[in-house]
Length: 366
Image 1 (cartoon, rainbow, N blue to C red):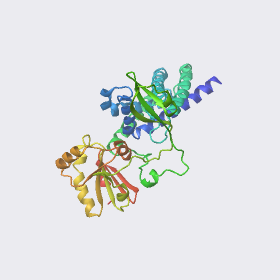
Image 2 (image 1 turned 90 degrees about the vertical axis):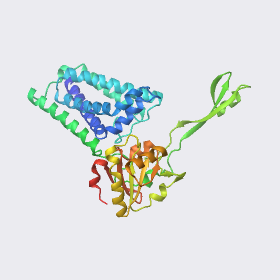
Image 3 (image 1 turned 135 degrees about the horizontal axis):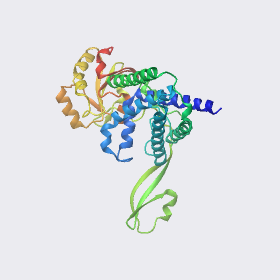
Image 4 (image 1 turned 30 degrees about the vertical axis):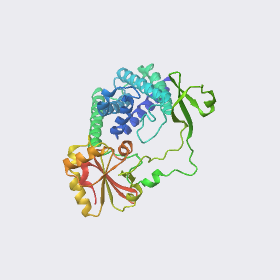
C-alpha cells in the first residue's frame, strides 16, 4: 500500500511539474513579467534582477519540466527530490507572500491558461509540498524505469527539446495563445461586463494628519477624528473585487481623444504594437515602414500602438523613417496583446485575424 501511494504521488508530482513548466515555456516572456513584478520596488525591491527576469524565467521553466521528467523515469532520485523540495519551498514562499501582502495578483503558475488567485496558488503549492515530502521520505521506492544509457538519452533529449521550444517561442510567438487577444477573439466582446456581473465593493478611506502622524479613517469613523487634525488625502479601498473583463485598459489615445471605437469598426486595420519603443528590436522596427507602405496599398489603416512618451515616439519615427501615427495604450495591455516588441496584429471589425512576430512578417496575408 505504501509503495502504491508513493508511485501515485510520483506520477502526480511529475506530470504536474511537466504541465506547469510547459505552459510557462510556451510563453516565457509572460512569466518573466511576473518575475519582474516580484523583483520590483513594491515587492522585494531587487531592481538589479529585473533585466535578468527573462533569463531566470527560462531557466526556471526548463528546470521545472526536466525535474518532472527525471522524477517519472527515476533518474538520480536523491538529487531530483532535493531539487523538487527546494523549488516547491521557494514557490510556496512566493505564493504565500503574494497572498498575504496582496502584492502580485497572479503568480503565473499556469501562465494565462489557468488563472489562480494568490490563495489558490498557495493552496496548490501546499498540496504539492505534501506529496513531495512524501516522496522525499520514501525515495528508496523510486527506482529507475530504464537502463543508464536510456536514462541519459531521455534527459539529454528533454533538455534539448525544452531549449529548442524556448528558442522558438522567443523568436516567433507562443505556440498556443491563451490570452484574450488571441486570433479569432472579438475585442469588443472581451471588454463587455455582463449585467449580472458582481460589482466591486469599495470603501472610502480618509487620511488625516493627527499631531504629525498620518492616520486613516473610514466613513464610519469620521466622528472619531480629533479636533485640530488636518485633511491630507482620500483613497478608495477595494473590499471585494468585482468582475474584471478579460480585456480592459485597452485604448487608442491621441491628442486627448480615444479612437478605439472608431478604428475597431475598420474592416482592414493593422496595429504595429511596441509597448516600449526604447526597448523595441532595431531589426524589427527597421521593417515597419516597408510593411506600412505595402499595407496601405492593400487598403489597410495602419497605426502604431505604444506606451512611450511623445518625445520618444518622435525620435523613433525620425530614426526609422516611420510615417504612420502612434496611439497611446497602457503598457500592460500592450504586453497582453503580443509578446514581441514590435509585433503586428491584423483586426477586422474588432475581430483579431492575424498576429505575427517581427521575424515572421513575410507570413502575413494581406
